Length: 301
Image (cartoon, rainbow, N blue to C red; front, side):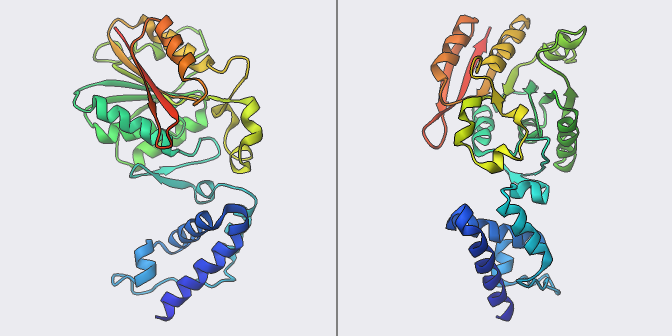
């Protein structure tokens, strides 16, 4: 019972230090997360004890590790970067400032693909702008028979993605490349020319940069100060540049494929029109759990 009281005291202390900045609910969630990371125990084990653990870590309110984490959180540093990893769709993913922190909306994108394409075997899949590799790793984990390729312009991000595939026990072909480059051989990398089976991709998915520069003022510092701007922002003058490039680039494929994008809620109509004008059919927009348009898909025959 003494340990149980100690845990409650620690949770209350940590959350009280963070609540002014993060709000009571988020501060409480962060407090439990911190204790789980520092002790290696889950919340149930912390609350009720762990029969398999003989020596429960003895943390104190003035522990320097706790003080350091609180200070970093009060400086708006994302807790995922502090601990170097996050849990997302049942995966343990390494994250660094070179990669975006995977969002719930992106999980919905993966779930939509699984729901619609899950019965198909031996699919060739390309994830453009893979970042941490979360989409590619999740799809490969759900469909071991699929051949999945992930591409990113950032060499650092590609290395993180490779590690995430390894730590989650899947094989994904991660490559570095720039979709806006027309250098010799670069187009072949993106149009499926290196895919062994059919010479083309069956599914192309991307969560590209889509936040307009003018939207920065409404965003939290933990995003603006720490997450990679190149993976987030697009110019107001051309907010659909990544979508247009990807959708145009792959039209040369010789076989039918399906396109899935995570999108800015402000542009579902514009994106639908763009895909239609490029020759895509079966265009659909899906709302996220908050009722905002977040996913668009199309089919190119």
